[in-house]
Image (spheres, rainbow, N blue to C red):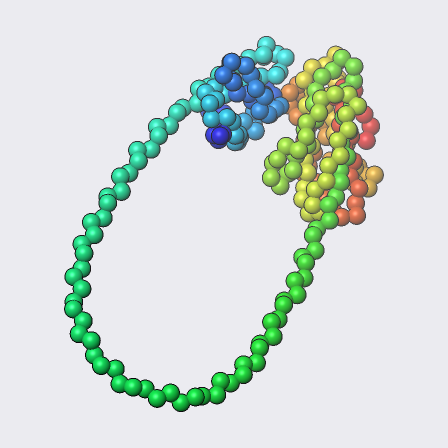
Length: 250
């Protein structure tokens, strides 16, 4: 069996810039990964997880190198078992049946009748017209990390704020598909750098043409560069190039 837990940071408190990983501790006090990396804003918004029912501790760990692997353990509260309700046993009172006096039944003469022949009613089978499904549109996201720099790229379904994929290795590529009409969002973070001019950068292309906002840039460590959410249209092609390091041309 499993239990659901809801994790949310208090927005009135001060927190490190993140990002964070979420774990739970098993019976041997080992950390078991749930999800990550997550931004502070995602944790303030709140996250739901399903964990084994014997789990007692949820752990929040900063993966920001500047935070020296800070980890916070939180104990899950136990809820009392419900008290069973006793159902009373009904009492059955027997009824006294009256004595029935038999009555003489007169003789009945039967006259044969003609039974009409019934005509079967035809069964009409309705024709089901399938509802056409909306086409799927694919998007390819690439990540380049210059030597000596660290960072990552995260890809979201913008309509549901669902994290679709996260990657932090130079040369990574991820292709996904969403229904036409859904929008996607990409965020890239630079965590450490060699030169002060190094940045997080995103170039967003539709049919090989950069959108009006490209390049999307962030020169602040652990603060993401974020593209304007892009709505997918059937028949178009979408490519997103993300960089951690030197700024690139569009």
